[in-house]
Length: 192
Image 1: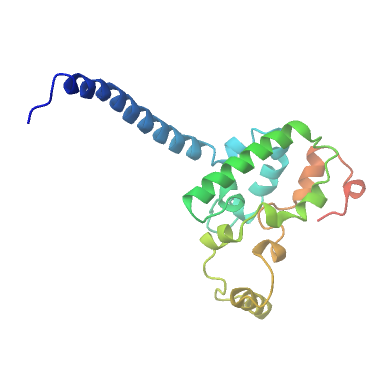
Image 2: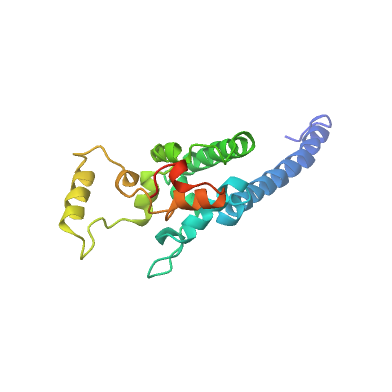
């Protein structure tokens, strides 16, 4: 059975649209991957003025490369979830949008950085810590650390990594914030 004259031209009209659609989809996918990669670096994050003292504190901490192995964790390695891709991209979009808005709205010199750091569970993910730190009982660990990690692993305590390891990602964070904004450390809050 051969197609009628009416069916042949209609089919031919779809091909340019399909080809353009496939091309635009490929461009969007590739551009999205590129944008995710570009925005995953500390160089991108520090483009927000308020992030500069955090970057300084991060560079001086083990996660910023101040460790025996020279390993560097980027901002997204700690501050985005390491579950599925959709969760990661959704959290990245939400966090990025929130950070841009806050960067325009808050006064970083009067903002309560100490108070905000108490809610670190909201912006540091346990599954992010565990994606790198899989062995929680390495050789040479003190007994107190082994006991605490055992309780954490068995779920007998309601703790997350940042509850015990408060400043592991940003060494002397409050000191760096106060120095950057020219605050007297004692007037701004207790030193770390």
